[in-house]
Length: 295
Image (cartoon, rainbow, N blue to C red; front, side, top):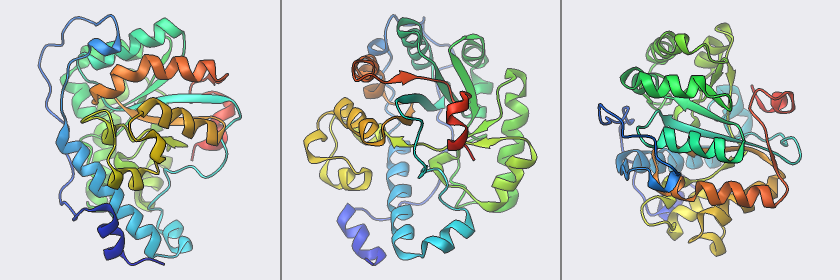
């Protein structure tokens, strides 16, 4: 078993404190783009740095604590270990709504006639109600809850966690969305699991992490982040190849991506076409085939 210090050395990182808050966005969104590639370039570098740091800390914790203890503490329930329905893919996008990006993704759903889920940060949905309404109205889109302000639930007390769920639940109620919740950074807790279950939510993790935050800066991923994300050396400069390879390895599954990363949007059309060419079919998270993947 490797000590935490050694894992941090492998990743070439030091722990960076502080959860990200919902990123500010322009008050008035641009007209809906014709394709994802035309979406604006919002850097959101702080969020990528915090995802990286949270991932390193989580890996260290998982390597240094018995699996039974971690399961009892409910800390890492977003990595789905049960197999997905064979041949089925469900795309999911976190951290929206994002002006320009939300419209671009919806346009690609129309183009390919495939469904996807949008896990919205409620504070952003409140700032951009017109975008949240677009997602709600789209026949191929599902709205999910991604907390009020996107804190790391491992870093805040139970009372604050409860407030995050309560505020987001209230803010998103008008969207009449299915009760689907995804933890920021995938970091769960027993207390919030119980709160979500009391409110009728299902917790949604992922089978495949696209690690789009790591590819976003240059379109490639460095060696340190490749180790964090489990990206094969051959795919370090190929985001689409990484995701397709990971989906093929799992034979389908729920794919985690983010609205806020321009590289993701620029490559999304190609990614969908590649997965379709590989014979995968797309289904919403509410499809009964994904029931066993939800908690």
